[in-house]
Each structure stands twice: as structure tokens, then as C-alpha cells.
Amino acid sequence: MRLSIVVGVLVALVQVAAGDVVISEWMYSGTDGEFVEFTNVGATPVDMTNWSYSDTDAEPGDVSFFDVFGVVQPGESVIFTEAEPALFRAAWGLGAGVKIFGPNTDSNLGRNDQINLYDADGNLADQLSYGDQDHPGTPRTQNRSCNIPGTDYGYDVAQTTWVLASDGDEYGSWKSAGFDTGSPGQLPEPATLALLLAGGLLVGRRR
Figure 1 (cartoon, one colour):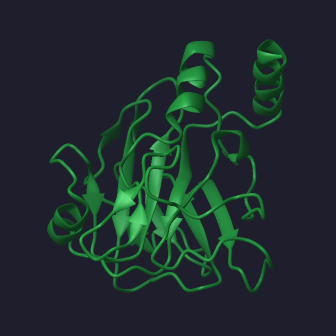
Figure 2: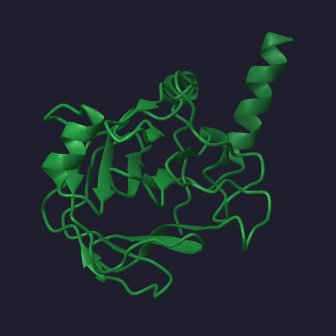
């Protein structure tokens, strides 16, 4: 039974296009600031210098990360937030090793929106459309984030099977100083990530 579950997970993974950096968690509205977490799910380091973000405008370079993220190691997660990085770090109790870029004040996320991640050449690296109004039954990430399961990195639209963060869930979520719930900067779904690392099958939504 256990073997069949592992095989099922691996089959689901190989059906997803290989990639490097993906959107792994987001929260569009929070007391301590909205945020998007990006994770390198590839097997090699990725230089995110001059990578950029855009919302539904879908404009490469809309918000450039410049050299803040720099080289992101395999399994490393970085944070993009509307808050001042120092305040976000303090609110979530994050160590100095977690890379945070902010504040984003020009292209804030809405209840129904799109997250677009572009590499330094302006190529779309990952995309996620979300919103409980546009996509009924999907998570509304208000004061609680949504972690994307490792087996679902192939989707560019939020799914009804995804759930909001809760204290002590499989992602190790906790409450911020402002009582938001999430796991920014933490490795996504440790059990699945360990399986991917062991099998060399780190995957993403590379376009």
C-alpha cells in the first residue's frame, strides 16, 4: 500500500513540466502584510538577480527584485511582501537568513488577482491566477496563507483542493504577531520535498 502511494506521487510529478523557481505560498491580505513565497524546487542554484513580478498587468519588470534575492539554493524559499522587510521579519520571527524583498506598494494583490514571476530576461517563470470569486471554492487568502502542494506545482490556477494555513499543519504554519497564519520562508511540505530531493524529481511550472 505504501509503495503504491509513493509510485502514485511520482507518476503525478513526472507529468508536471520540469522547472526551477515556483510560487509556493501566497496571502493577498494580512495584518502584517500580503506576501508571495517563491521556492527553488530545482536541483541546482538559481540566480534571481533582476527577476521581476507583475500582477494581472502581466508586465515583465513591473517590480524588479534587483539583487536582493541573489543566488537561491535548491529548496530555499524567498519572500516578496508589501511590508517593510524588517517589520515583516520581526512579525513572523524570521531569521536573518530568509531573503525578503519589499515593500511592494505599486502592484498590490487583490482578492481576485494573478501572480506572475519573470526571469532576468523577461521570460515567464511561473504564474498563478487565484480568487474565490473568479474561481469559486478556492481558498480566500485573507489573514491565512495558502501553501501549494508539491504535487500541484503544475497548475497555474488555484484549485478547490488547496486549503488555508492552520497552526501546526504539514507546512509547519504558525501565527505572526498580528495573528496572520502561514509559513513564509519555510521549506514547502517537508515530506514531499524530501521525497523530491531523494528522487531528483524537483518540479515546477516552468513555461
